Image (cartoon, rainbow over all chains, first blue to last red; front, side, top):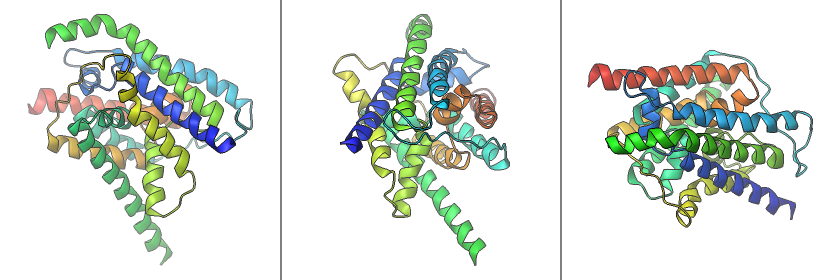
Length: 147
Length: 150
């Protein structure tokens, strides 16, 4: 019973997140690229999207901070690390390079892949391959460190 | 293209703001009900990693979240029109970009949702640094691709 509620709220969260990406126009790479193109016809809408999202989530984080378990009785898993290391910056650099190349980040790409857009599906497959590459690289490094 | 752009410029601030608030609402629900950060690259990467290492822990809710995201446009279309979407990048560019986004978000532990929204909402210095990094790289790459290389 509890399990199915947890899966249901996860499903609804993903669904509403997708609605937000659609309504805000962020599923359109052209709008994202217009934000990143400061030397062209700059479109600031991405900042409005982030502002609206941050304002609402900040309230949720404020509530969550005072609780040890969620309203469904699950542990609250908020990252605690505050280390700014090379790995964080190198990863964000690579992500930014990909984001600027296509105008897609993971959320919008998955939403558009769901519409059957071949270009979005191609991007998602490449993204999954990149993630798999990361797992393989991490695995290889771990086993070479162990031996 | 120009007319669409002009209309977009008039309408977007309100749509962008309310759309952003919907994203915040989804993040809030996921945090307060499931106790998790709605970081999409982390959720998807967890599925990839889980399948590779044959570990099924946490696979169910991750798949449920991704399913919600993937069907969102189809559900949306039952009630409203989908906005026009232009994907201008060539197939080659999309593949390069996809690999960079997949590998980079896993190495950097987050993307626009995990660092850009959730991280900034809780004022995490790590996420602020990550967001500054991916955004400035995005600015630089678009500048190079549109105004230098052409």
